[in-house]
Length: 389
Image 1 (cartoon, rainbow, N blue to C red):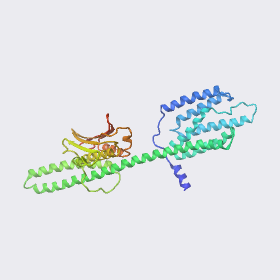
Image 2: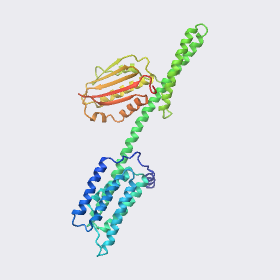
Image 3: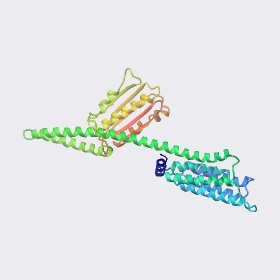
Image 4: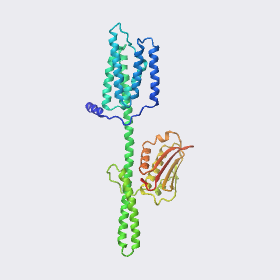
């Protein structure tokens, strides 16, 4: 098991897109460099101030690359410290040589490097960098021996704790990324199944109209032409649905051939008595030209929004759902009158991720936020014909 764990660590890739340098990095540098200069000037136990200042400045500069090049930063910082400590050990053997045995206090910043190494480095980089750090500790303890075993253990403990903290943060970040990806994948798969059912419905309608047209072609050519027009319209819509389905289908699960709900089915979500909060539904406009996939998406978004409001909107007594025809788009608004505290949205978990993914895949938008007075509002706008319009 240990062997497998080492292999897994060695093969671990770097996290994608590490953060670039931000103002906090420059602010940290702005603190550490003057601190190193003051250490070299004001401390009386420093035998050679230029070396003390140089050590502090070099270590501070390596922090600028701790995310993008963590191993290089560790190698530069601790390699430099090893060279300084070795020079200190040699100088201690030469009574006539004046060389500082005291490091500036600002060198404590190197504790950030093990964290960054395990947070942002590849597995092999973390292993190599840890070897470099552990190789430096005996050298520095030789240059400046600890007073007791507790101080020796603390020296190792600080750096190992920093590395463990970086690994822990990395693990939780990777877990969150995987959870978000799984939520998106589940939403894509559900949407793909719904689109599959819609396409099957269109194809069935085309087959029926084709049979009718063939029967009427000789005796009622006008009615046969009308059937052909219906076939053309259904075929065009089916082609659009299939293009969308190909774009979102990720796994070959067999879909359930069950009629998918649409906008008119949202009225079933209303609860006026017996359940709190009360759910009121209002539909306004013409939804006859709404693509079935969009109708199903509006229903699912309304259903998820109501579920989230019931679960997480504290003290809510009413949830209003409004679906409106807006020219070439359909607009869904779900509003509750619960507590509008900032914690409301965060408690939705990955449901909001899936809702956003569904709206985006169909060419729409989704916005969620607190109301000016109280409660939260979900606004979704989807094109009537789905993606590509």
